[in-house]
Image 1: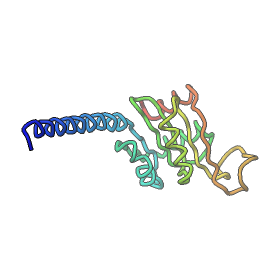
Image 2: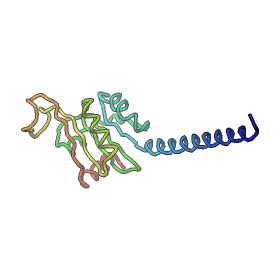
Image 3: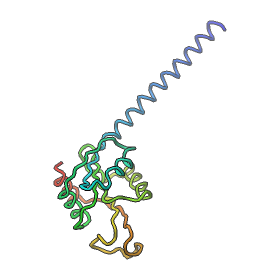
Image 4: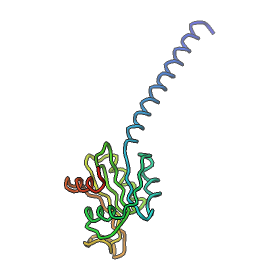
Length: 168
């Protein structure tokens, strides 16, 4: 092998190495930006803590669990007009409300929630509640006793109420 061929191989190797370093750096930037999401979990009975951590663990590792039944009830009252306590997860990005999840969503609904988290421009509420707990009836939903799951946007008033309850 001639000196010129060896030199070309070294240049190709250096280019590949530099490309790999740049790609690794860009990937680490992307991962650190997504890790800026903070999840506050209100779940006084530890019903959903592990599920929420498992489902949201792909986008963050920053979880704070609060066993505050009063705040849990206030959040359910504010967002769904429920006089019950259900697990509540509040996703914050740079101290702004990104999403609120009430209840324990089904696996299929988690997929929809994750898509919405990744694509949504505005704050939203995702809820998964047994029909009998709701103060309103859903005429297009399955028979009584079923799980009602839905997503809707959050108003500015609701976002301010959430911030007041969580102390942000």
